[in-house]
Image 1 (spheres, rainbow, N blue to C red):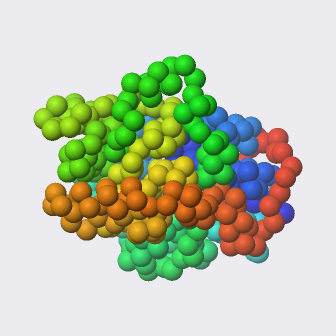
Image 2 (image 1 turned 45 degrees about the vertical axis):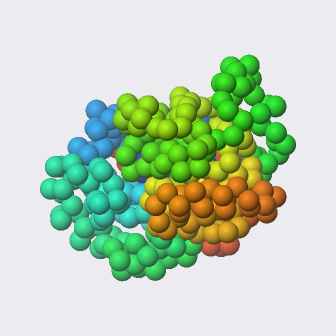
Length: 383
């Protein structure tokens, strides 16, 4: 029998969507059930079923939609599938089916228990008055739903510990898929750029410290400038977001040149990784895909001392775990990172490749991968 893939909501891009994409590629005969879909270029829309929330304005306001997500997940139909594979970072693991079979099994891949409900200090969304008001009501419900009987896999040991603290459940560990093989199949990304991207790269210095991500406070992109200042080396900050003005103001006050690259293409981002002396990643993330991408091209990562990144960046092999922020420590971190063997860094990154994820997914579920294409429809999404 085929399975059913369940996901919170589908966005055009995102780390969780990359996981769903690999799930869908592994089990290509499985339908995908989601609250609503904003489209994804690599997921066939004919396989996607949406719930009634997709036809309401609530799809554009997750905080307001949250109370209705819980009953919506509890009233679904599974159809001919006899098992489900759930991708959860909010309430998708609550999913229940009215037509479930006796031998039904549920596998939940946990990106995290909702951080803005359980650990709001790690997620600014937890500061919302709506979320704060709902959290005390939602926590016991969330814990109860997690105890209903499912197999759990966490995307890192860091998240596994959160699952234990919040849901009182244990989990296997399966690291998320990163396109390591695809990145490494190009020998020099700087040679693969189109004219526009090549021009951007040409205007940057030959040597710099790089940080790249959304421009939001918890990403702590300003630490790349501090590390660059400590060694008198230029910094490049790539991405975009609401903190851009503050980051530019920090750059103007810096003792070293600070360059900004607005929302680089994947190809340009890989070329930036290639040229960088080191990639700086100071956010406390549950896993962190971008450090693995940097390592895939052989670039060492300087990271903080907390979060899933401690599992991906091997201290002294593929990067440096920064334990102190004084000038001497920052200087030493960059010096150490720049001295690491880039071939060894590339080898280390391979353990996080998408192919490894697919093999572990199949082993965990005990369901063989499928190769046929599904012609899907919406008949099983409960309206």
